[in-house]
Length: 473
Image 1: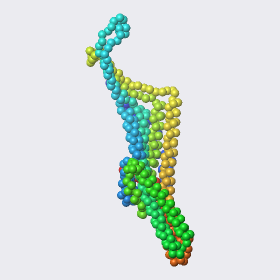
Image 2 (image 1 turned 180 degrees about the horizontal axis):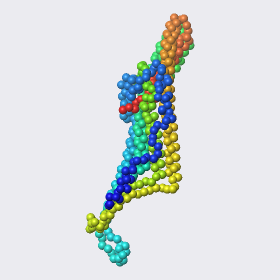
Image 3 (image 1 turned 180 degrees about the vertical axis):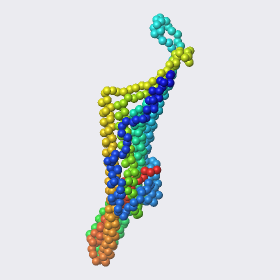
């Protein structure tokens, strides 16, 4: 082949890669993530319960609870939702490799040995039965699509965005799994704490019932006092089963999160009777760190990048596609294998172009542009939702701290009042109805305080979940 015949092909190859149709991706200038209000300190972080430090990746270790650490690590290793997210990530990465393969030449090889003969009629010898013989046909081809308008490059960009979004989705699942495991553990321990508080109230009421019964037998009390005391005891005992059920429910939730059946998880975990709670100020960082840290924001941003690249993929359909091809073949009787006359070859471009009817391509472009607008809106919504969740979690936890302080003071006052009422009753200075009312108030306040402490643990975990900690390897 004359060298000058290759010049047009070499020029086309040189031009390949010089242009990419469609918009180049960048975060939209009007994006919510670029607003000054999204980059600054949190409004509610001015509370004394918080400090302006980066959120630690393994935030659950702030509780200094080895049991919680072990449960979270086990969940991150065996959780079924994480296994699904991992498989989705592998699929996206495989799709990316498949798209990248389009940038490489395609090589094909074929071989077909046969035995037999054509009919005599086909050989223009009617009535003759030709002899059988071996024949063969072999060939090889190389083809390469010139990416003159960047369609393949845009497709690679889109697949890359999909793979990165899948990675972010996996990271988001890690955040959720860590938080849900900590929440289930906190719920179990909080139920144990509330159960212990309720059992203490039952024990105190039993002692009160014994005292009233002795006074009634000594002629200093009435049957009505004994009946009232027994009724209060039954009411307090009725509070125990729900807490026991909450304990078991949370334990079985832990089993599912850590990839175990209910019979496999250790029942020794039920001995926990103190909800995990931080006593130090919580590191929360600022809005700029939140936008970098939360995987769901990264997932939405990468999905927007992929949608933008697909506009270029669709736009490239308006232009011709050129594929360079080179093929060589050999075929004939087996006895002539390798003879010069059995060889053939060809080289040349294949040009395909749908004109003038571009309506379908224009429709695909419009569809891609609409998908990109929707992806941009979802990105903004994700950013705004992340800021809303964080500010809400900050204020809920701060106000719950205030409520807990007030409930603790109320519990202490009611405990003092109940103690005074019991002493006055023993000395005959008041009736048992006063004691009963004081005991009920104490039991109510103790139950409210235990519920508040459980809520504090849950609010702390909700805050760490909103802050997006826990996905870092």
